Length: 465
Image (cartoon, rainbow, N blue to C red):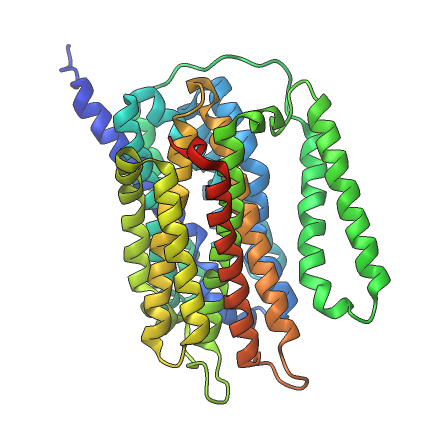
């Protein structure tokens, strides 16, 4: 019995749609904690410190998994590694959905963090199955759908948690990830492994990077409470420097390093990493502060909104972030990455400073958050597209993995810093931060983002794709 072959163009298009659906589903699963964190803290009797730990567990795991996933994808083939990685994510989603307490939920979030490695693997597949011009747009679409899925998850998590339960807000996007992974496995053609590299997983590098990131988060989270104990803070800073120095030393000597720091010698890669870190530190100010200000109920500021209301207020940002991916890909092809990043950084800075100055009405924050979502999406897409198409095809996963690790670290640093600002700005005997703390957070986030314009100017024409 003979079967009718599927035309290559049709197969390719359907496979890329499946890749986009997977990005949408994983983005939704990644984001459900943020708008429902107050609800989770109440139901699981978590302290604010435990809530902060829950909010960054996925980010830290993602930063550790991403470079390994990109390297293995280049070595063994993007589809093969992506399917196995998503199996871990699905297990993590189910563990989170069934979690009866905080330790089990943390375990689920740690496993879910593997989803961050899906993006560089997706870029490997796009580069192998599409010509360069079309791959730029496809990378933008996949990136945009991941961001849009994240915003959709933030929008839907509140109603699902309040109307059904917190268990279902993890279960529903997990089911979508399972379905999208099965569809991708059926439709995506297999890709040939890239150039092989000898050596196994760099466990020493993984351990030292883990210790570095955990210590960094501790320094940022505990800094406001250590004003009376400066020696403890100095000790943590020394420990942080020791771990970071040890990690760099191990990576430079490893036969098969976890993160190939030599890739940073390429101008397109180190520029993208530097810009990504600065922009994401600034963007995380809006990511963290806007929902907190919506939920706050202070004297003359805040709105006392619940999880469902917060998700609804973030809807315009979801639309803007979703459009940013494909728009960023098209704009990068038309104008070059330097122009797109500079324009996005201007929008981002204006949006953050505007929210610092005016935040007395809901629509002030809604519009500001939409500006931030659009601008961040344009910047990240432009930098990922430029990086992915500026290195050898076999290095796509490693190079984009470095950028995505920087993105995750930037968000984690920014969120922890903003959390520290709100903690320091909470009056004694109150659990609501002062309005000045929110203003300070927005201003500092805008100032950090403005630094990206100096970086773009300093790097000059070299950041063009």
